[in-house]
Structure formats: C-alpha cells, structure tokens
Length: 538
Image 1 (spheres, rainbow, N blue to C red):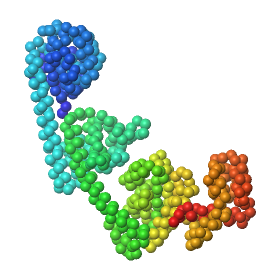
Image 2: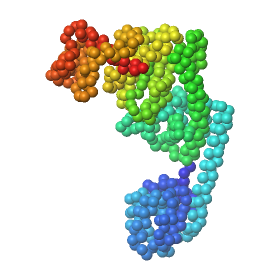
Image 3: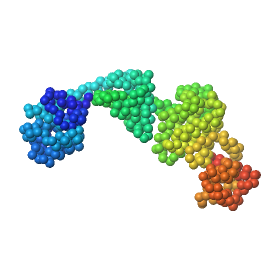
C-alpha cells in the first residue's frame, strides 16, 4: 500500500502535530523524508518527499520564504512539516494561503519535536511497507508460477489472480474484445464501452450489469512479450487504491504473456504446416480428396464440397500499414464473424490464410443458398466495414465441386480480383461469373491474335489516353455497362451530359463506330479481351 501524508500523521512522533493548511493534499504519496538544512534546498529534494524544517535557513529572507511553498508544490513534494517558535514565532499567513490554494499540506510540529527522529520514523515506515510489497510480489509470483509450470491455461491464471486480490479480473485482446473473465464475472453481463470521441484503447468503461467502472476504478496493464502485445489485463478495484493490487497485476501479466507467447509459437508452427498444405492444394499437388479432407481436420477445417474461394487484397502501397490490416483481419476473425453474422456459415467451415500478399478464404458452401449472391453480399459488407481503414479488393471464384477444381477456382478468384482492379478506382467486389466471356477468350491460345484484335479495335483510344486526360477508355467502359445510354453513363461518370457528348464525338473521330450494332458487338468483345489480357499479363 502507498504511504500518504495521512499515514504519516498517525505515527507516534506526529501525535501532537496538526495540519494547518492544504488539507485536500492529505492523500499525497510519501516515499521519503528530507531535512532542510540549506537555503537552496530545491536541488536536493525528490518527488513525493516530505520536507521537515524549522525554516532556519530562510527565516530572515522574506523572498525565499514566499517562494518556498509554490516551488515545493511544483517539484511534487508530498508536503512540509514546520517546527515554529525557535526561529519563527508562527507559520507565516502567506505560506498558509499558498498551501491552501495549491492543496499542499503544511504540518505544524510541536515545540519538543525531534526532527531527526521524525525523518527516521518516516523512513522506517516506508521501508517496512516496501518490504511488505516485495514479499507480496514474491507470493503472487510463486503461486502463479507454479500454475504456469503445471501447464495451467490462461483462465486458471486469471481466476487465481482474482482469488489473491479479492477483485474481479478481465482479459482483453488488443481490440478490447473480452478473452476471458474470472469466475465471479462468469454469470454477469460484462461489456467494454468506448467511442472514438471520448474513449479509445487507453480509456474505456467496463460495464458489469448496471455498474460502470471508469478509468480510476480499474487497473489496466498491457500484456507484452518482447515487441509483441497480446492485450490487456484489467482488475476492477472500485475505489480501493492499493500498491499490492498493481504489483499483483504486474506479476500476472508477465506469466500470462508467457502463456500467450508459447501458444503463439505453437500456432505459428502450425500455420507454416497449414500454409504449405494449402499451397499444395492450390497448385494441384494433392489428388486424394479423402486424404485432403482428413488432413484439413487437423487444422480445425471442416472441408466439404461445394467450396468457394474468396481472395481479399489490400490495395495500398504502404507495406507496413498493409501488414497491420492483414493481421487485424486474421487475429480478429473479422471475415468469419461477418459470415456468421449473416448466418451463412459456421466458424469451422472456414479457412483463411495469407498467401502472396493477399488473404485467401476457403468457404464451405454446402448449406448456403444462392451461393453467388450471398458471397457477393458478404464481400460488400466486408468492404463497407473496412472502408474507413483501407481500400480493399475482393475476387470470388465459381463453386469448387472437388479437390481437382481448387487450382482453377484460385485462378478464377485471382483473375476476377485483377479485373476488378482494372475496372474500379476504389474498393470493390468482383465475381468471376460476371465475366463469362473470359471462358471463351481464354481458349484462344495465340496471345498475339488477341493483342492484334485489341489494337485494331481499341488501339487509337488507348494511345489517345496516354497523351490526354480525357479518359476515353473509362468513358467506353461505362457506356458498355449502361448499354450505350448516354444520360445514364454521364450520371455514373459524375460529368455533365454535354461533356460526355464531347467525349463520344472524340471517340467517333478516332474511327470507333458506336452506332452500328455489329460494330458495337466487336467493340464489346475487344474491350473484354483487353480486360482479360490485363488480368493475365503472363
């Protein structure tokens, strides 16, 4: 427990002392005591020290006397004990006024007070309490360490900490999600309340039923192992202020961090095996469907068919920020929670992995109705919820009916992702089935033939866009999407109708026929070949 000015006044040597000013500072912490033997005392005092003096060094210096209290308060001393009569008849009124204004305690000592004995008594009290804290730290450490060495889980450590301190304990992840609570909170409704305006990861409210614990009513301590932060341990202490509580939380956080780190190391090892297994699936190196399904179960993955593949890619250049977003999505089970929220798929029907700078999601669609529509809907929900964090592209494959179809489905999802990147400037969701013409185009083995066709039909527009800012290819794209309805296209492009008419005239001047039905068909085909080539540069 911390020593305060109030505790000092209860010592035997202070029985006849009285507080004459700054009573609101009685809760100030006292770490040690110092005698004032020189006028320039300020360089020799420490924070939370209690100064004891007769004021002899400055009693005949009015300026020094008037500056003493404000300066001591500024240096965060606990207070001052003054023995009057011998050098000053009484404590100056100016000092008393200053102390009351600053909530800085002034204690008037009796005439027979032995200042050296008072210092010794305070130091002994401080030392005894420090020893008690060290003993308590050792007790907490030994008790929790024995649990750790027996291989007990995090729940057991949290419950034992709660038993030691006699207060409820919570464990939170980095996003303030509740990982576990002590047994005394198991049947309670517990929630974390915070908002971007008033609260955040540094400040939040813990609500237990109808009781709210504000920042001063709980102890929060980060759980760190090296440079890795796993979350927070929170002790709901109410109005109690006790140094032992802080010590207990500190010791618990060290051991909980060790458990987290051990689990993290095991998980990383499992991930490396899992990722190698999934790469083999996507590369078509595994042919036995039964063996694949059985091995998938060892990674907590209930693989059933049909499946769909969803690729999620963060579309920014900042590699550090990109990695943070991917880690957030993986660690928070963001995708799985979104599907579960829509009540489409259970959590063990998923597998999300990081491969080649994107997240690949395998989704068990065996009980999913309207697979394409629902997967697109969830994709749009993911994009919507990430829009404030980052720009994201999502590519979705057709259904996978057997293990042999995975390599093709992965390519489909990847190609639809690339096409979506070409077609959209912001976040998007792109389904491969929306580009069925690609199934025909990809059968043309002679790439030079495709390139030549695009050059003949669109080459002049592509070259024109390289030298001007008229964005004719973008204009053509929207015209195709809107069935060459100029008014709808202008609205979608957010430009004036006359501006669109001017662009259309420019397209015509380049020799592009957008009025003849057969010519339009060739133009649409050329545009899709252009997208296919953009999506498949190799």
